[in-house]
Image (tube, rainbow, N blue to C red; front, side):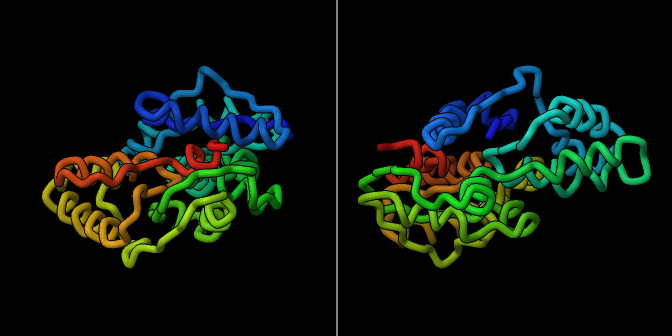
Length: 238
């Protein structure tokens, strides 16, 4: 397929290796990967903060940039949720609503695209380590995605997947939530990280770099050796 990659702004700025790993995996599977360099943001930050009027110009620009794509793949359950679930809501009863619905119908989260859309559960990866998986809230609760990432990880050679007890518990990031309520956010992060460390895993893996930024920050502050990796970074290994 001709896959148009949606790289979230924070991935572009802070975690470009996650985006490059997605390209590696998709091209390994024979897809042609395109990337609209003019894309900046899906409009989620102002939308989540209640500033819908401010969110619309940003979201509309994103929709227009992806309007001609055959299929759109994003490396963030959070941003994919914005495009697929919330953009149609943001533009309900407005002239852009049909555009939002058209783009939403062809937008997929990375692991979802591989497993559900393409039927691929083994990408030929090898990663000799013990990992545990964190379910990001948007991917789990808005998109209903839980199994695909685990199916992919279970087929990685020499990888051991150990489930944590708090896999579905929020890490406490929540974008502006972490800024507005830092004490609550930190406490939630500490609960998550205690569960991660209890597994004895070398790495915590997720399909949301925003969650991993929160988790790694808490782990580093506690002096824990566990490292975080985006799912694509694991799948890109051979």
